[in-house]
Image 1 (tube, helix red, strand yellow):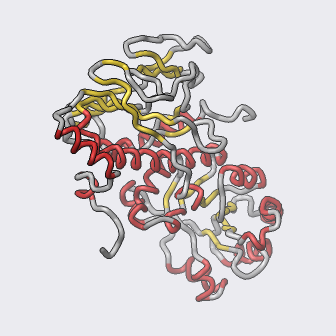
Image 2: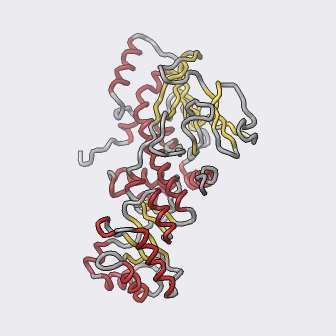
Image 3: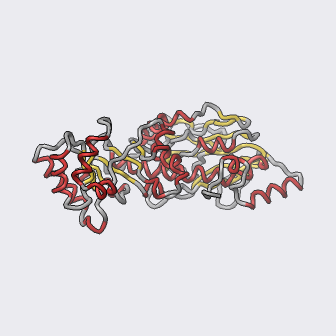
Length: 396
């Protein structure tokens, strides 16, 4: 192998599953046991201090399961959810209905697709919540295996990032890739020559964003950049940790110096080791854009588990799990979730009295995807951003 990756056929054939599922399938076939089950996907706890998660990865999960004799019900992709409902029951984000042998070997890859996708989308949403109206760009592909570039960028975009840096990721999303200039250009050409050449060679459609921390003080260099570019859109700080001191104070000082010289329209883009906490601090200091890398691409996964909760229409589950097929309702106003036994209804939210909506919808019938297409990515992203307004922090 030149690259240590599994191809699509290997994933679809079950070669990326855990071996014990193949052995389980072998035993069940030998013993002629093929029972109809409900297997649901839930998450017991969210990472760190997360107050919500974004359900993502459904499109790929359905492609994995396509052609099997099963039905699949799920939250709409991009749904923001709380892992535990208001009434204390874990919220099923998806469940599979069918004979267990049909899909046993797909548990591992299905979880992998959902867990990592949701982790990236959730981290992006948390960062976008802090950035608000300011631009967030996904810069994290260099920290991950290159085969994952479009996967990372798609889920970062779904979670709320306004742009992505990889050529392939942008191509998949039908976007223009976003970026500024690397330190390598400054080192090879020299600072001023690099700026002049950037302005001269590249299309006017590309924003003029000057990297200002390669050699000297950021404030002094930013003022030089305003004199060099014909029309400077923004400056970018990627100051290394060993030189930062208090990064927010650097940004605040820089904002002041640009403003008093009549450059209030010049933005300040920051990058390098950012997460939701630092984005908030830097936004408050005057930053107007954020290039976020590793914290998005290496985001904590949302640790879904798949568990059988019903066999031959009888509730059954392992210890620690709630048995039986379930209904999931969400309040349209306050966003609270409620999990009920299958068939029960809840029209009004018991918390705020507003209308609720049923959240689990059939997305696959007898192995065929229902009304689910790849070109809905922009729609999914808008859905996430709309829901974020409900999940704003109390102090906002």
